[in-house]
Image: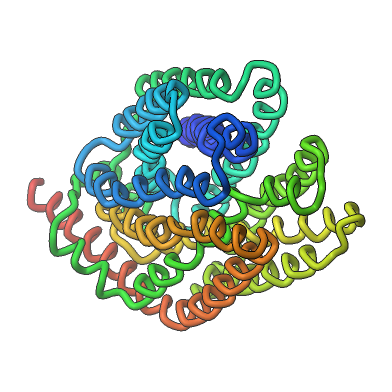
Length: 431
């Protein structure tokens, strides 16, 4: 695959993720007008967040299998079309119960990313994947910032429903772009052992390889970490804007500025985290989980400091909120790269789908749980209790992953060498 074209694919996928995340997270800064229109409280609004998360979690294994069985590029185009369609439907909901159901339907396409990363793993080798994934994941916080801008500008002028109509239409346009411009790649073509073979055989998912995923100790630890790892993300993206307005007395504009500070820091964090993982990976295969462990502990520490700063000191609060945002995303590109470091090319979508299924399934209750704690105590209490405790658990699990992952990486590299030998032997036989 030509170098220039593969970076074009990265650009298309970045655009897709940027606009998809803007649409997905757009509901968060619009919580207040939505709650006012439907006359609901925090616990009820938590159902809106959790519904889409549950749907996405359930469909991760389905998307994972489909990606490993069929053309990933075309399925990504389908996911983008579903994004546009379901967003339109949710904008039309006249009552709160229908809004919960239609907003939950937007979770169908939220579980589409495993195929995207799997396809890119066939464009880029192991030593570049962390930085490529980190670059792509910058689209997450940038999408949230775009959503904030849309919510605070167009939302106030046109209403929250009109903003959903706009982002839904964009999803359909991106679907056409992916369908006509992104080509499928041979599974495994970027593996170092297979890179010099030119044409390689087509490998498909099979039951034996899938069962083997659950026999890899490092992967099982990553799955366990994933159960807790997204709790803080779900709580902060769902409730932090509301927390700034309701408990720290920020105006909508002040809350937007504070969130943008954190988002810019997060954007840097994805890229820095992915690059650090790749850089240290050259020296030790334990690098990615170790970088992740240190980062989540630092994120927890800085969040605790930020939440303890007096309400009137907005500048100092913004500094520590930014530091929290910087370290929060370090683990994300490293987890994705580590999953691909230990799994065969033809099962990477499924492996990552299982990872995301556990992440979303575990964290789906987080927004609703935070809403319940907020009703009984405060959002301040909910945010600290959920985020800090789960980050500490994640750091411990990353530490154990770092101990075990070298053996699983060594096994994969051996399997790829054997596959390369089989390919060469088959060619000699044909000759």
